[in-house]
Length: 214
Image (cartoon, rainbow, N blue to C red; front, side, top):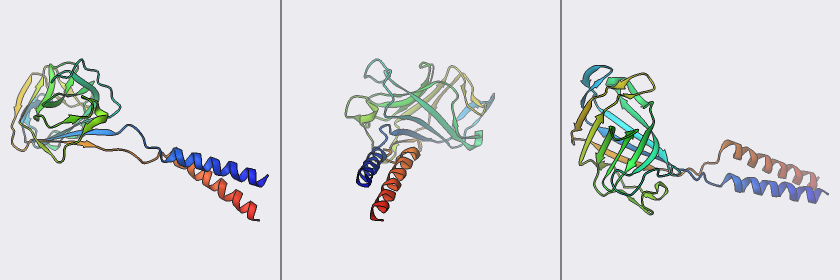
C-alpha cells in the first residue's frame, strides 16, 4: 500500500517537474529607438522634446495581419511607449490602437493607417528564418544607426496620461545620434502556479518516503 502510494506521489512530482521546466513559448520583442531632440506641437504648445526615446513592444506569437512582404505590408498588433522627460513622458503608453510594421529596410509604427506614422529607415539589417514571422526574427547585435526617419501625425497621438502629440506634424528626424535596438528574449522561468505544483509534488513524495522508512 505504502509502495503504491509512494509511486503515485513520485509520479505526481515528476509530472509537476516536467510542467515546471516547460518554457513559455511567447517571447517578448522590444524595438527601442533613441532620438536627438526635435521640435513638435505637444499639448497645444510648440516645444522641444529634449532627448526622446520610443519602444514598440509585441511578442513572437503575434500574427502578421498584413497583406504581403514588401515595405509597408506587414503589421503586428503592438504597444508603443515614449519617454521624454521634458514633456512629462516616462515610458508612457500611447492610448490608441497601434501596429508595429516591418519591411525590407524599414521599421516603425502606425495608428490605424499610414496617416499617423513613425518610420525609421534601417537598411537590410533585419532577417527572418521565415519571411516576417516574428518567432524566427534574427536579432542584430548592438544598436543600429538609422539612415533616415520621419514622424507624421494626421491625427493627434494621445497618451494614457492625457498628453498628446498634436495633429498636423511632419518632422524629418535628424540622423544625428538616432539608433534602434531590437531586443528578443526567451522566457524559461516557470509561472508561480507551476512552481507550487512542483513544491507540492516533491513534498508529497518526501512524506511518503519518510512513512515507508518509519
